[in-house]
Image (cartoon, rainbow, N blue to C red; front, side, top):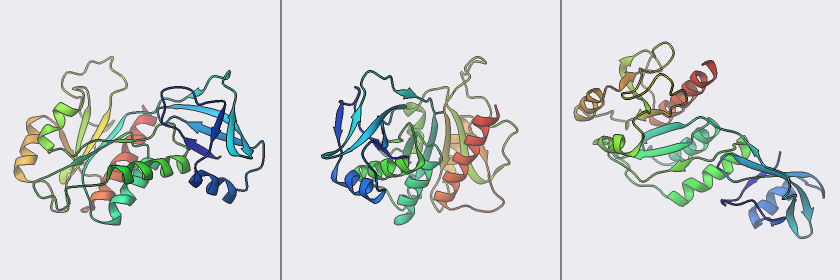
Length: 240
């Protein structure tokens, strides 16, 4: 599968030219004229086209409707790990179905900034490799106390804490204000920095009724905890 993305609210043109980087990938994959190339909008739509080598591009039949696949809303609210561990988290979380990354500025955070351009490039590269219909979005960094204002009331929140309880059977407790018929709510995991959440932050989460859970017997690094949460959410989505 050769998948590229175009950020557009409209259908791609009948002839879509490849970028220099995409041309390098096409040549490395030894694409021949007429080979299938998939064009995604990163918002759950995907069109099928045929590769044209001169000039390098994709011929798309605009009369054919795109394939649409709905992906569950999986949110990761996390402190930023240092160095290449941040890039690794961006890449692997995309492979595990992340739809929204919310960076956190916690009281004990060591790192408090990131490059949006670099993050979005990693999302695209990892999304193409994983065959994602929907690419993650990344928000501006927030204090943990601002999370309720940034996401719907129906969001299912899980706080990752090595002192928390084992995962509840069937997932997290029901969110406040949720109705029984509201089947497909967003799931969100909150991951703190290397030094853990402060007492104030933990008290805030508790005041919101957000369940603190541990997904392993020991203490996980920031990026490991986030990926474990996403894998856990994927299991919950597929089991019920």
